[in-house]
Length: 138
Length: 123
Image (cartoon, rainbow over all chains, first blue to last red; front, side):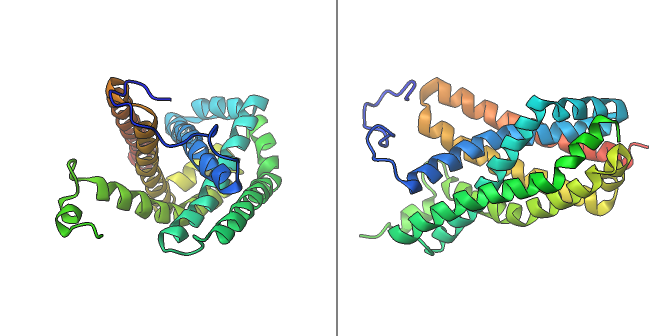
């Protein structure tokens, strides 16, 4: 994983070393979702720029986002955002020393995974119809 | 064994490590409030189409929430990706990646600010 290191000191242990456990999964997902949301902010700013550009540019971007690949992308961003936000709360509480013991950390890891899925579905169930509204040029 | 006061106040060789830590958490707390607020308003205006979105982005409150959420996001994502880059890359690759990371975040922020100014004052 290293590129251009001049120093052969060992890096942090990777997935091949550790037995998989749920706090490790949430840690990896936190970074992965964070990096994915990098693209999410790009789409958000593109949306803002398209709105500033005018109705034509706006509708063009909307028709891209309303396509099936666009919807899949938006769904992925929703999932990444839900998880990153909820797991971020967990990390902020850790900074305060709350829930840092092994049992609680394991339990809250599962809670965050389940809640992220529920939150994503809740957002999509309530907002899904608005995507079709865009297609007809609302 | 405690970290000496000298090392704490010295902020390390780069003189800004603590700033990274604090900024990441301050923006995290801000986003915890701003993202639900933004998403709720966004989805509400979104359903009234282009005109609804423009009316919301053109209102002082809508513009302020959008400006704040994007500003906090851009800082938070730059710091987060910086940490990932520092974990996985070294040497020239790291330098270039960090540079691009900073430029990308700055560019996104400037585009967002420009768009908001145009919507609100562009006539």
